[in-house]
Every structure is written in C-alpha cells, then in structure tokens.
Length: 289
Image 1: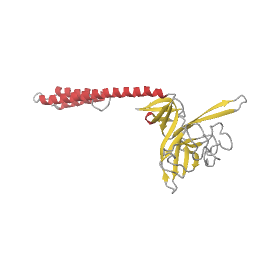
Image 2: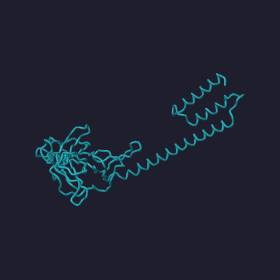
Image 3: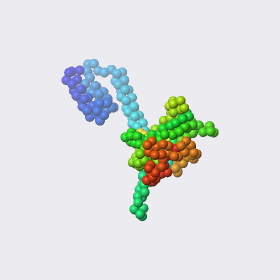
Image 4: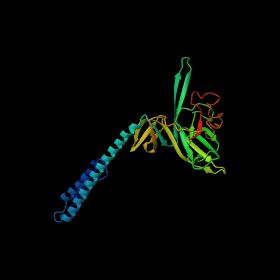
C-alpha cells in the first residue's frame, strides 16, 4: 500500500475515533469503518483473501451481537432497579427493623398557654446481643463527628435467658449527654463493649434499630431507606416490616431502666441535674428482651 494511502487510512480512522462518543473504545461503527477502509486501500495486486474477509466479517458480527446484548442487559437492569425503587415506596410510613448501630434523634417544641416551651425528643431504640456472658459492659454514643457524647456503664449480662433463648438487650437513650445537657438533633452511632469475669473482651452479636420510614432513595444500584431519625439504611438490611412501632416486650434486666452511671452526668437517665431532660423521654433505658 502506498505511503500516502496508509496516511489517509490513519487519518480517517483517527477521525472516526475522535467522533466516537466513548472517546477511545472501538464500537461497531469504528470496526466497520476500519474494515471498509482496509478494502478501499488494499493492494489490487495482492487483494485480501476470501477466508480473511469472512473471518473479519464474523468478528464484526460477534462484536455487534455483544454490543446489542450489553444494551439489552442494561435495559433489563434499569427496569429491575426502577421496579425495586417503586416497590420500596411501599415501606414509607411503616416501621422497619434493620441491622445496624446508627440511631436518630429528632425534637419537637410546643409553646403552652403560659408561654413555657416544652421540647419532646424522639429517639430510635437500639437492640443488641452478646456472644458470651459479660460481667460488665459499656455503652457509648458518638455524634456525626465521631465525638463521644454519652457513656454508660452497665453490670453483668447473660448471653442467654433462663429458658435458653438468646438474650436481646434494649438501649433507649434519653438524648442527654454525659453532662446532663440535651444533645443536638441528628444521627448518632452506638458502640457496646463487654468483658467477662476474667477481663477478656466479649463481642457484641446482633445489632438492630427500629424506626419509621419517611423516604426512599437510590444510591447507584442500591435502594436506601431514610428513617424518621434521619439515618439511612440499606433496603437489604431490613429484617422486619410492621405497620406500627415494633415494641418488643421486655422484662427488667441489668440496670433496670436507671440509665447506668451516666459517666459524670449524674445517673444518666433522669434528664441530668435532677430535671426532666426538657421532655426528652423517660430517661435512658437498658432492658433485657
């Protein structure tokens, strides 16, 4: 092939790549242009053999089929994601129990006839289990900036109930920090640590939160649920769905609802400084399910 013909082929092919919306990937149009250009500038004294031509056409056909298949699969994927998003809207207004350790705190204020403002806080309950018996446990609450807000020391807890069932403990934070002050609204992370009688660490088992769904969002291909407390949970983490708040029947357990030591904040469960926690619920609770 003459040198000027080779240069022209390169120019036309590079122009085709430049016009390709993917920028550098060969699509079927570029592949076909390459094949046609090769025919156009082939040496008439040494033309392409029919076997080579058939092989290249077969490659082009395979490329086109794969690209069409990719487009079809993408269409199916989009349809499935849209259907999943539509189905997830049925969760709005219902209560879900999901795996996780992020809770939310929201507050509403009401001004009475006497002008006094009463603030009521709604806080997501948190449930957890242990992978062994513990002689003491510590619960910590962290804010979005990973700053420690509240610490509570607990006594001994058993892995199993007396009937052999797994013991599930409930932590109902009253929304107060360790100084007895009302914490700001937002999302908070709960961590629980335990030790056995010999001082060895005991891992936390299952962690659950229960709250009402307010919104459904899509993060790429993942469906996310926004809960009343402001936290986001993956649809795949949902363990239970119910029409009403899934209150779990509890019996008195370790530190029966007194909120533990509260770590420099009084007893941590009476709203701090002997007050009522500005309407922040009934105080921090730790119960056995």
